[in-house]
Structures are given as structure tokens and as C-alpha cells.
Image (cartoon, rainbow, N blue to C red; front, side):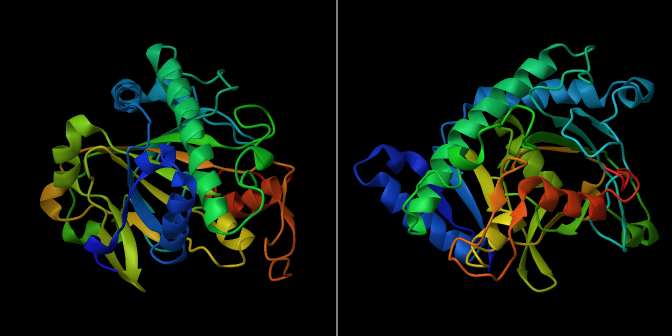
Length: 322
């Protein structure tokens, strides 16, 4: 797969006669093959995306003692909160990962950074817009996979989204500028090679800084085993990929693709990078079973599956007693 082969899907046809079926065929084909796509005319207002970028910039530049007072819960539970560098490691056992994050879930406001009061509202708006688009996208996907119930991936498995009982999270990530020697470059990365855990991820760009993102580089997708290519921002689009639980749910019909965020060339490392991702998960008690009726994978609840994966990545964070 080359960069030119990352497909661009125009979601505007959703509103046309037969649009859901046409999109379903396109989306299903892409997620069976490339696993990544650009989507334009998605309907998520750019000003709401930009509002989160602007507010989160102020959040990440707060003093460390302030950020450290708003840490994400160390229990296995959905929670807002700051995740400092070193807590998550996806590139095990290779390189250290240089990034900090803030996780947002609508019903947990105890760890919101009140020093930036607009941050919480901006995150809530983008969370809601992301879910509205996700429902349409997942309905199309179900139709494209020949499912009689077009809501199997949408409302039927997300009764508790945005409430206790569902782990869906809006995550804002900050990759600080970092000057380094060649030796350090061998031991550091921004986000290690991994697949996502949940159903799907929407990756947002900030139109005002597309050139900045192009200059800095970052998101890369594995085109062939061990070889990665950049996913260059396209103005007015989001990037979507599905996660491991969707591959399992569809008995490996869909493809959860390995990706990473790298430092890139040495002259890029003096620039900061930010990203926003909407990570969609099924309800905690929703039982995921193979849609084809096979026993390729045993049934598992949304929460149990996520617990297995988070314990592997947050090696120094979650206790095993939960």
C-alpha cells in the first residue's frame, strides 16, 4: 500500500438516495483491505475541532504540578484525566515514548483543568459530534457487511455512551519538541507501533495548522510488514481506522492496521505536535460474538476485552485486582 492508496471517501453521498448502501460498499471494502481511510464531508464542524486544539494547548502548557493534580484514575475505570509521559508504552519492549495525553469522558468532571474553563465544554461538543458521525458511519458499515440490523455496531451496542457503562473516550495527545542525538533517536519514539483496541478511531486535524502538521510529520501506517508510510493531513478530512475488537467481531473480515507516531527527520523534532482521537468502544456489558456465527473467537464483553489490552499497555498504571 502506498500513500496514494489510502482511500478518500466522500461522506456527502450519505444523504443521496441509496447513499447508505453506496457508502457501505466503499467503507467495507476499505476496511477489509487498507484498514485506513480519509473521509471528507463528515459533518463534524471544523470550529469545534479547532476549539479543542486551542483549549488543549493551554492545558498542556499548565505547570506540571497543576497537571499532576488532575491525573487519570489509576483504577480500571473510565475517567477524565492527565496521563504523563512514561505511563503508556505501546512499543514494548523497545523504545520509550515521548508524549503526554488528556483523556475526556463526559460524565467525569472531577479532573477537568478548571484553569482552562473552556476545555471541558469544547471536549463535550466534539465528543457529541463525533458520536453522531460515528453512528452514521457504522450504520453504513453494517449495511456494507450485509447485516440485517444496521445498528448492530451503533446504538445497539452503545446504550451507555457518554455515561457510566461505556469506555468511549476523546483523547488529546501532545508530543513535545525534543532535540536528540542519533543514539537517543534509537531509543525514543512518540507513539510505538500498535493497533487500536476498540471499534474505531476518528483522527482529527486542525485546518489552521495543516502546513504545521505536514512539516512535523507523525502518523504512519504499516504498508507492508515492518515498513511504514506517512498519513499526510488532507484539509477538511478526518482519518478513520478500525480497532482490534472489530476485527474479532467480524472474524477477521475487517483489518485492524498497525500504525505509529514517529519523530521523523531530525530537523522536525524541534516542533511540537498535537492530535485528537475519538476512541469508540462498545458498552461494558455488551457481549461481542462473531457475526458470522463461527466460534473463531469466544464471546467476550466489551469491558473484559478492553481490560486485557489496557493491562498490557499501561504496565505501570492499572492494578490487577480490579
